[in-house]
Length: 260
Image 1 (spheres, rainbow, N blue to C red):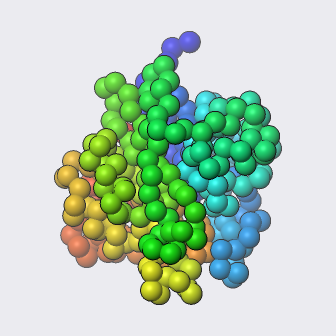
Image 2 (tube, rainbow, N blue to C red):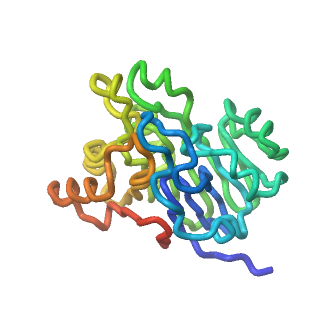
Image 3 (cartoon, rainbow, N blue to C red):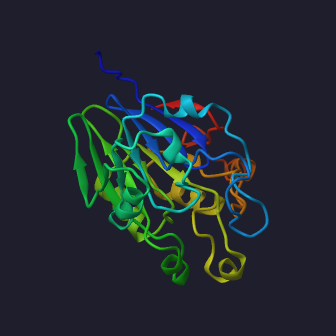
C-alpha cells in the first residue's frame, strides 16, 4: 500500500483533531458525544454546545492512533469506546494511562518523554492548566510535538498556558505550527484573580508577539464548551484590532481541513 504523504489537520470540534502526518492518521483528544449530553463545566449549559458536523464514522475512519493530552471530559468522554477498536494504540500522559486502560483500551500506553515510531517521533511536553493554585486544582496536562524528516514540526500545546514551560518547548523543538487551545476557559470563583485556565485572545496576541514570524498558530477549543469565553469572533476581532498578519493565525471552523 502506498503511504499517504499529505500533511493535514482537520478540526473536528473543540479540541478534537484529526491529523495526517508522516503517513499516520492521528486522532487527538476525542470527544464524539452528541450535543448537550455531557455535564456542564459551570452548571449552566450541558456540553458540547454544538453538534458534530460530520459523521462519527467519517471522523474515526482510518485512525491509526489516538493522542490524549489529558483526561478531562472536554478532551475524552466514554462514548469514544463505542467507536474505536479496543486494540487501537492510545497514547496518554503517564497520569492517565491506567484510567484509559480501564476504559477498555488494552493498548493504552503513556509517553514519558518520546515515542519513536517508524516514520515519526512524538515528544511529550509539560505545562500548566491555569495559573497558581488553579493549575494545581486542574491537575497535570501535557502537549505533544510531532516530528518527522522533511515535514513541518507540529506542537499540540494542549490545555497549557503560555508560560515558562511552553516557551521552553518552543525553544527546544522549534515548531512550524502550534495548535493552541484558545477558548479562554474560566471558573468565575477563581478566574477573577487567577485568570483563565487556557489561553484567551490576549494570550494568543502575546504568543504572536513573542514567537518567530514564521511560526503559525492554529487556534482551536472555541465555541463548544460552556466555560470558554473566547469565541472565534472575539479572537478574530482582537487580531484585527492588533493588526495581526492573519497568515500567522489560522482559526478553522469545525470540519475545516488545513494543509500543513
